[in-house]
Length: 294
Image 1: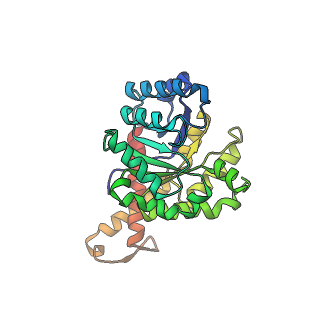
Image 2: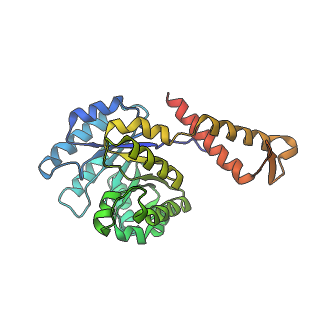
Image 3: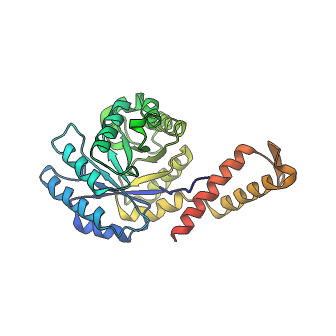
């Protein structure tokens, strides 16, 4: 199995706040979204753009994945954002308001034309009604040459609520169909998917509940709006000791000579199949990747 890159905690940081960009180097977060869009006022876009360029170019973020969220290409700032991001060479560029595969291809072509390194990936905000209806088509773009950089879906639940008039309530019943659809689309084409933000960052119980729900839906992690959310989020999306121990036991059992050609075996009185072994390998790989960071 390929090396895993945990994306349990993905923290938004406003590009206009130089102090926050520096503090981010000390946070136990898996990924940082250096934001040029929603978190930055129009008159601060240029300053934020330069500060993000300096931050990414300067380094010092360790294992943290660096993602630049640009403004849409249909805005006055999008073209300059994309040019800067291609130059800076982050791990990924996060594109807002994606509605179709053509949006992915357009960004891919522009990154290639700007000379962006092949390792610069595309993340997309899934935050519009059109995106919900076209989730499979958008994810499938990753299989095309122009969409090859696509790697992660980010759920934009606040914008989705605004556009659909659905309410964000405990349990998120109005949104469950969309969340599950995006999980299925992402998995169908080998993408990762990260849940939307939890707005009441002082409500620790509510946040923990929503993290658990997102994990159970199949999300890889959650986007965050405050540093205090990082550690509980990491805990929620990390496999527990008992889960890892059980996974190792399944793997070891299938590796026994007498079991290597079997599709199903018994482990500790429970029937397990090869699909459970594959799931177990992923659990162990994620656990090892997390352990390597600490």
